Amino acid sequence: MPLQRPCPCGSGATYDACCGRLHRGAAQAATAEELMRSRYAAYAVGDTDYLFRTWHPRTRPADLSPDPALRWTGLEIVDSADERVEFVASYERDGVAGEMRERSRFERRAGRWVYVDGVVG
Image (cartoon, rainbow, N blue to C red; front, side, top):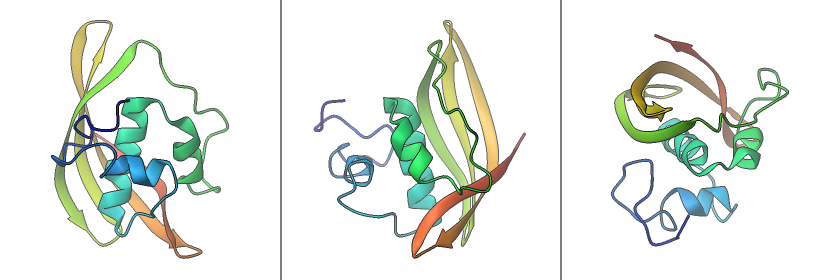
């Protein structure tokens, strides 16, 4: 993804100034919401290494291969409080638009935020 394009997370900042700096390891997410936004952006740009690094080892799946028919198209934060973030992620699969709503749980592990799990629906 070109670094000066808008970040997929919808912050309004460039990818390089927003989630790109987290993806390349130049900074760590300061809040659970920032980590959630950066994980959404990682899905959008196909950065599975970042997803692996930011997923709690206890709940991380063995395979994080992306769905080639899926394209993430937008993110809305519904609610964010401490270790929980609720969001709606828009996508397109084979030309059909859809949404995924999730209430995600995060925790700090060795000083870094990680995704634990979420309830979809």
